[in-house]
Length: 540
Image (cartoon, rainbow, N blue to C red; front, side, top):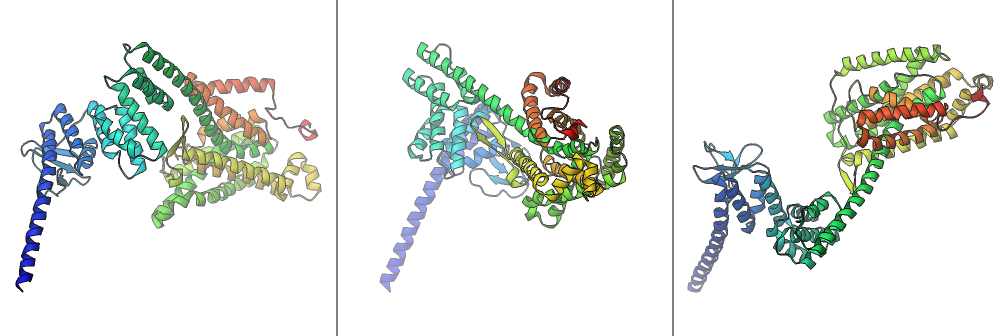
């Protein structure tokens, strides 16, 4: 029994000693942090700068939390109590040093720690140092980028330590670039080290690298100055090439939008000879179908939101197609062979449809969200590609291929081409021409409805949505060749790319005017467009 008691006393004493050591160590760790955050109570930019550097150097686990709160405007202080707090979105306060919740009313003189542009760069560099060894690869990469942009010499030891442990090639390259940026920005770097750093920065080849090289002082040695000048010239050439590639991608993206908007018009105008000024409203109806589908999903099952477009595409096609068939049966079928009268009738119809949508949904823009797979962007070389535009390009190409396949290999496509080429002969062969007319107009309208689904992801959904595309759609159809779907395909992308290359020099409005003038001149030379239809039916 005595032995047990002695053992218990010994264990108790040992626990007390260990706890004492732990608490002493915690107090020792907290002391530098308390001294560091005291700078934030001075309400002075220089004191705040000192506080950021000391918090980052403290080695505390709360350093990143405190500096992030400062960056986001959530770090608060009370000058009277000499205390620093972190405020959450709900307005609750916690002690910056310990993370303990602060009860009761906040101090009367509570204010946020103010920062300026110089401090923002220092803060980004400090956060970069703190996250260079993070377990998350993306955080390490972002930290290396932050250090590259800040060029803070104080981050060099952290960069060297991270480089020694890094195994990911992409992150290692970013760390090497950060070290090179620090070397070029730091006084006392030898010429061989600067030349090596210039080579690394030139390999990066973006605007940040160009700005860094342009900041190299003019009094550097001739070898360094020549290397920097050559690197700047190489980067500028590379950026010019990538700018042209980026504009080409923007043109392809715009061309896919024009293709979606014009492909249905190519059927109703190019194949049927109907000048349908209400075609833009079919696009608008498809966009509103998307809005209704998304509202229903938000209300009844938000988890299915990523499938909203998959549900909206067939519904928009069916709804816009049904409206198109109704228009053909009630108006258009009485006006075949009188294009100017179809223009006036469908123009009036477009105003009626716009007002009907305003009455039903209101005149303001409606919110249509992007599914998760259409959100964000990625870098490809020196260009940025957004996922929503990429998906729209793919969708436009798929819609075009599906339409070509329908017209070439289906019975309906065969009958539609027969009626278009020789109505009397088609009727004598037993084809119900009136039915084909209605279905053809419905097909063109349905495709316009699908275009509205895609356009809802990049444009405002409003009653005026279709008006922004109707003129461009007619230009595409006429330029490509009336009645030729391949002409519509080529024309849409040619006009899209030409528009995007003209915009930087002439502006958006003058660029469109220039495109219109060029099309007019082209039509004077080739009245039937790029790909003119040939044959006896056309000549007749």
